[in-house]
Amino acid sequence: MIVDAWAQHPTLRHSQDPVFESLRRWTKMPMPTIEIPIEMTIAMMDQGGVDRSLISAWVAPRNVMISNDEVAGFVAKAPDRLVGVGSVDISKPMEAVREIRRCVNELGFKAIRVLPWLWEVPPIDRRFYPVYTACCDLDVPFCTQIGHTGPLMPSEVGRPIYLDQVALDFPELKIVAGHIGYPWTDEAIAVATKHENVYIDTSAYTTRRYPQALVDFMRGHGRNKVLFGTNYPMIMPAKALEHLPELALGDDVQELFLGGNACRVFSL
Image (cartoon, rainbow, N blue to C red; front, side):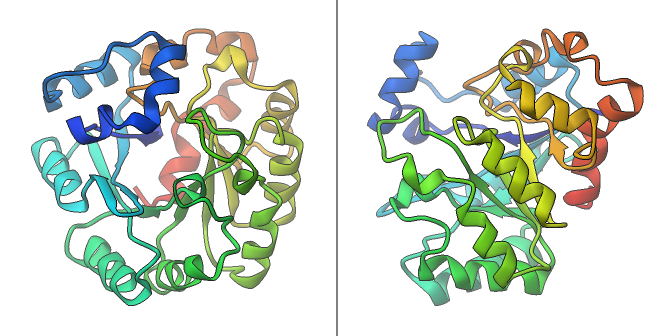
């Protein structure tokens, strides 16, 4: 089974948001002018051999790009293929906690994602801590982004080392850190090695662009720590996996990377 740990079925609000202009310049993808049908996302999954994708809501300050209810609606159209990941407004702690409970208990979501660069604060900011508490209480992973940002926003808040303190404060919290952590991949590996419940996902990078240190980690003591991700629609699943054999992971490690680790971490 192949599980995409980080994807989104975008709304036009998300696709057309000015914050992604730099990404459109890099990927040379035109700005969508009509809503993408669920059938297209499923077709791209099929093309890449992806069985299930975790699709995320996007909540930014004063701006909901993809709402939790929209994600729930997408999942309802393809419940055997799509898995919901919620997001919340960390500036309103009690509302955030109540929304996390609704996402998990009523909408059936399997994780919560908040991106530090959207909020321009690191994950040790006090506004994140109610989110961590709620995730621990409900036993769902907290997903986030590490590394530099493609959008023209501050990258410093994505330093993986910030998650060291979070993991110390919440040792039972499962943390899935997406986008590899480049240019601080060694930091990400160190934190994932140190803490039992910290994981890395490879979203936003094709297999050919994985840093060698990450590949070595996957082949060795990090075999249970790395999850496959695309960041679809930025990268199509088939493109993300195009050069997978070149990693020479071996059958057991490759199975864990492509789906086994995600099934365990997200209780799929």
